[in-house]
Image 1: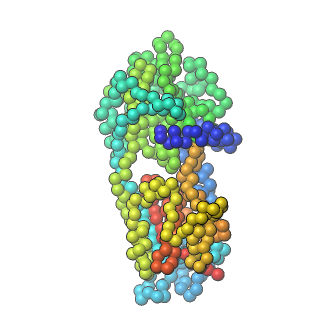
Image 2 (image 1 turned 30 degrees about the vertical axis):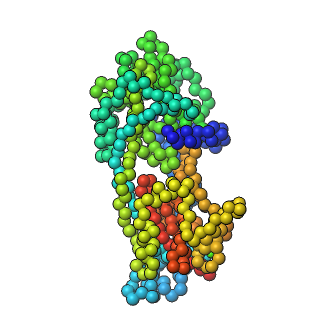
Length: 444
Ligand SMILES: [Ca+2]
Ligand SMILES: [Ca+2]
């Protein structure tokens, strides 16, 4: 909900602009109206399909860049068509050592992979009291606390999250009957405007024995902003709006536990669009009585050195840099940009404020880099960068695309290591991540 508030102001404008290019989202929202869960799963697919980087990576990976790869000097002994690398024998080492060298004639470089480290998050689920809810984007509402969510239900949800048995756990508890938008309008008297949509159910949401209508009301626009509304049934066929709070376009269900109905909403991280837990609400007398938030806490990371070039003489320095499970925090604390020891910033430069000798030829490349934090439902956070006159990073990241899989490049930085600049790459696969180190050399 914090995210909603942070991006709220900016999004009013975005919502308007968004109407002009949001065809995909609108279509899927409309298509998803009948089935509550469908909307979210399709959103996830949409995320991937609409992210420029992914598109680009896929295309480039498919085309393959073997064609332009040529042998570099006399070290080359074998082609490895699969991963666009060469297996080489290091001429300086006594032992034969496998090296992974990426290169491109067009981009004019060779890149020696020095190390790859994978971090896999170890998490546990937790339940927390919600101190309120957003009645509107600015206004915070308080729960009446006239009735409380039992700890046993919270334990059940935490256990399901820890054991990854959410589906099996919640399926038998589901209650309520989905109704169409037409039925929703007919019963509540609310007419949907052009871009609006509603996913509604008939259910006794506030447990007074009379059926109510609950609807997640999507206002239109790519931000995914919606309102969870309760129309309390009075028993004589009338339904009146008694509660509304802000949410995103997200999957929800009513579940029944020990004779009472609760609203369970699936939560996701707005930056990464990945499932992040649940929120749970109890209504009483048409109002929100209590709320709990369920999330995953990262306890630690399992670190695995997937690859290391043992012939590289400063391997220990690089290993020391990459053995850092705090990288996500560092990235967040620095507004999504990591600056290395071999980089300088010139804030007078409008387009390419950063400089660093990426390819170790003695001349500094100029570039810009920053994190894209999404303000819509169709993109995820990822690094945006522009080089003034170098396509090395484009080429290298294309070559890594397959091995990186569904990760997104979050950061690159250059550190000076004994007279050479090392390129570090950080790929996020929330909550997991992968770090790389490369020694880039200019080729002629
Ligand atoms: Ca009721
Ligand atoms: Ca250079």
